Image 1 (cartoon, one colour):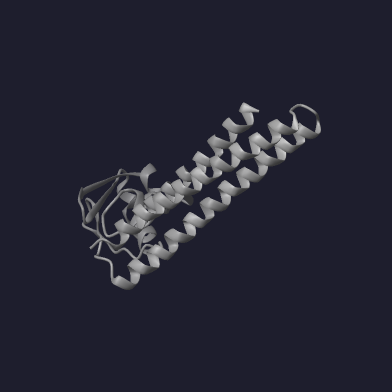
Image 2: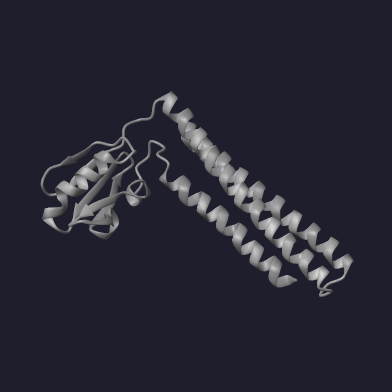
Length: 184
């Protein structure tokens, strides 16, 4: 029984971790290396993450610098950034690629909050799916006479408490991200 609860807890924590990772990719007007982590560069015919073919750093809160190790990759990196859906314009001076993060408009901030809410809802759905899976396993255990009916009811209560706790965590993470996005 404890194994089922521990497995469920790990999967629910994974959903929260995934939500935080998605939030890291959302642009908030502050420069962060997570913004370019998901960009794939066509490097000699192979899609490669920017971080695997260059050093990415944040010298200040409004700038990201990318320094490809291979001089031949500058054009490909620049093109990948321009074609990404981030709306960023890289400046290539031959030695380093600089990306200046423009300030967000009010309209763009509201759009980002909507995207963040969608990510949060997806995480909540994942948490509820874990709850359903756990309850199915518990009911099967009761049906197979591995646990009593009292244990079934108690376990279902524990699963619901755990689900409520992780849904609340998802809401807290969302509230913090919304505050960060709307902050000027």
